[in-house]
Image 1 (tube, one colour):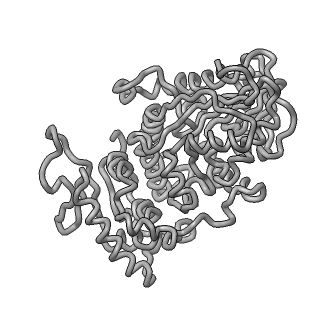
Image 2: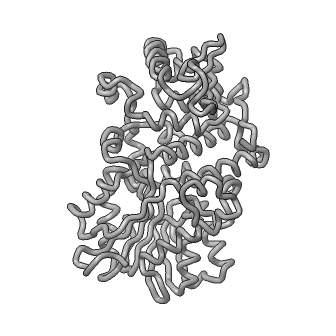
Image 3: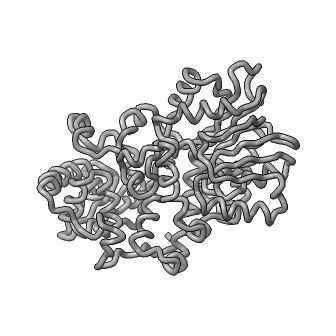
Length: 438
């Protein structure tokens, strides 16, 4: 790793990080902590991992020797076993992330450690205990459901953190979604930073091509980001109406559009997608559906259908998960919900196809899976973010935040590296349209 992971401070600001500053000591945490500790130790004994404890104990296959081929197993170092167990017992996977933020454990290669868990996420906990998960683990708070009243707050908690923060690790296009690199296979693992901007633009161009965007096309973009897609659509001669719920994104995207000379062709409004009116020849939406919420996916696609002109096309990019995992976790409240994306739910391809077929007149015509490209996009973001730790700290983001953000990036990357997560470009049109998308 080309950087040093920020160490959690001895004193943590409880006003900012209440769940991190204090180790849970309730009866539930004590009792469940002992059970969680036993389950964790039993699970890792057979994993390709080295789990090291302060007393010298090593669990995992590393205790039996080197990995096949003489390579080293990834190392997870438990710094404070009792605190780690208490947090794990009190919050499950939320506790796993919080204990990392607090410094209860560390890893030389966090992504590699998380890959081990991601590859076996459905079997780490014994099946009889999995059936009790709904009784024990928290559910998403009602205030984080993506109603029109709540959605602005949910989006703001992530995207309004600071444009400067996102600029610290994104490329010059300010694109916060998976790139599409020209490389494939093993070559993808060596792609360098200087190719990221072009790969982001290639991703956008493919979506615009699939949506048939050209001179005179009326484009609706759901989820503005920082404006790169609107800019590239305008450069083709299209007119773009883009909606976002992030005031920070709106401000910078408008500035970028004006600086590029496309202010007359691009309108960016602070508006919920459900409130959009008008008719559009193309609808594009990049990694926005994950923020919609499970119970609102039908509304999302019904809105798109309502505003899509006859003969129009839809091109979305969506992070996806296997359908069985979606059904098992769609109401769960996770570390990602608490700290990164409140109210979010990742869809499955099957859910998208079922909802559009049963509740709309839209049909999926084409898909491109590109999860391995997201893994490498995340790798580049991680390296860039941690390489600018001092700069991020000077913005007011402390060591706990930086450990949180690193965990988020590595946790996500592990999902794509193992295939637990994927990302798709999906083309849709009206069911009455003739033939598949070109």
